[in-house]
Length: 298
Image 1 (spheres, rainbow, N blue to C red):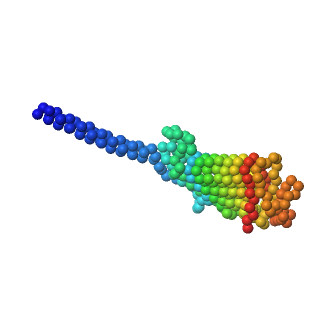
Image 2: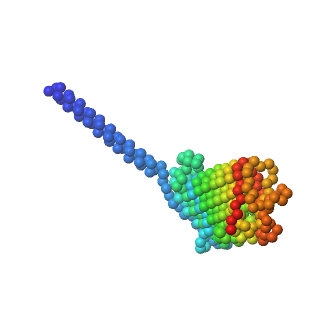
Image 3: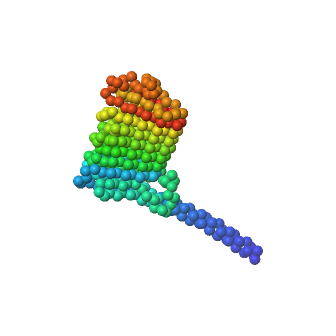
């Protein structure tokens, strides 16, 4: 009887241990799920301001990772910023004073501050007043950027992007004459449509590594200059046949440059309609390695 009772007690102890292990696994799983939910706390926040007596606006956007959208706003709003973000990583920033707007995300200090590791689902949608002359300074890191400047009155434009896929378009002529527009691209792809609608006297595009497409369509209210500086990668220039083009290649170039449809005149290449074209653009290309292709469009 003692032996049987001993065996019975042993079976009871083993069952209790197994039950405890199962319960422990369940508790651990629930805790892990709760930790995952707590690790990403997503919020959506909107910040907006009405137009009052602003004669001009300076906009500075610094956005690390995710999806950035900039477009023309509606109604009487000076700006409307819609943030979707993980509050364990970042805090939205919207500061306005004396005609200057600062928009972006700042780190909370609770996690890795490296934007490359930030959740990719984050987004910022920024709508700006169409009737207020403005200077735009846009900087963003990784992710995707959709910048539609159609209808905005931009006096000065600066775009700096790191490792993002960026698209810029201008479907209408900028109502403000622009002295200069500068776009700097790191290891990223860039697609620009409507360069002629920027109404800029000088446009500078600097590309480190990636594929860049520059479409020179648009109205071109005045003659312009396009300066292209590239390291590695490829640049494609899409040029309307009605536009007079003169291409310069200063310095020693290792990059291949396709000049089909251009006539060589001394140290420059120019289109056959250069003298007769209503609007002319001078293009200067400085490159290290890579390729530059010129494509004629209607």
